[in-house]
Image (cartoon, rainbow, N blue to C red; front, top):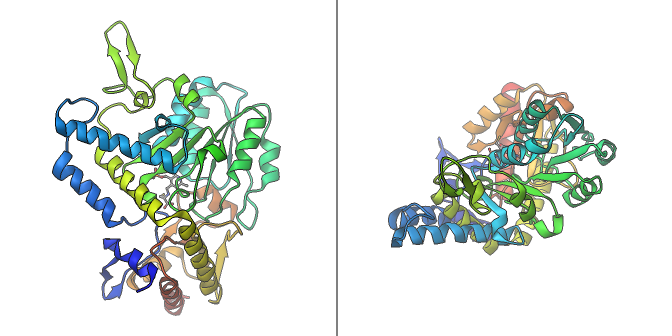
Length: 405
Ligand code: C6P
């Protein structure tokens, strides 16, 4: 049995048929499948340790608190944060970016300030900034994307000025897979005194990321895109910045003391975790981190890069298929169109063949417009995929062309 087969075996949802066809799951950019150890960690929490955290003196509460805080430590180690207090549990990358926009950016922005993003952002890294611009009078600037899907770094540099207060960009584009040079981009932001916010939703489940190396100010992740459960993610923030910030939501656990006259805040990170958090989600995420570590990023990158090259070849050899934004530095995302067949129809026919891909604008409408498209097909790869999956994708696309092209 090949290594990849052993890996695929630990993801129970992959072992099913769609109609009479083997499931070929190529939609990991939307959400990854979950390894058995993550499912077991969540089940075990509910079966044995279910209790609220940070509040109880009883055994279950102490066990739950320990597991939740261990998960924070695991994420901090994976991201090479300098301390675990720099990790705030949130619902996902969307909530992480909104937290920064409202709790960090909103109080410091005013008319004349600029927020720089790029054309390849997910709506989650556009709309929170538009909201905060409306609230403060700051303005939004957008760096261009090249025809091959890479960032136009000259455009990025040109738009960085003394007025730039915040620079927010994806580590990896969800729609086309471009890996951005985030270390260089954060350094450029620092040169003009701007704060960097990296949307890492599509990175951590595929490539190693080190906060100490990248030296960004904030970094957002989604647990469900890194083999963890939905409804949990993390915001990394530099400790000094988190200390300065006011909380963004009020409630239990985020306070030290409350009176009608004066309320004082709890320490970082609890100041940003009002209310009962997603305890089971955090524990599941902790298990996902351990799974990533045991697999190892070297093996992950090698496997996904081989499959990316293979998948591009498979699709490019089909007449009528055009790859979109297939840059050199790309994670395992293949965006494509099929001449004469709408992406949604391609997706439907592929589903009949057991192949799961995503079609549409991928919550990146401005990027679609940049390529004069309204939608694309997107096949996204993870560690459990094989070259056979990509062969299957190729035959299913040929079937779509035969039926509708
Ligand atoms: N992209 C996709 O199919 P949430 O929904 O909060 O977990 O993540 C939002 C998000 C933010 N940034 C990037 C780069 C993303 O890819 C996503 C989620 C999914 O591409 C669902 S739209």
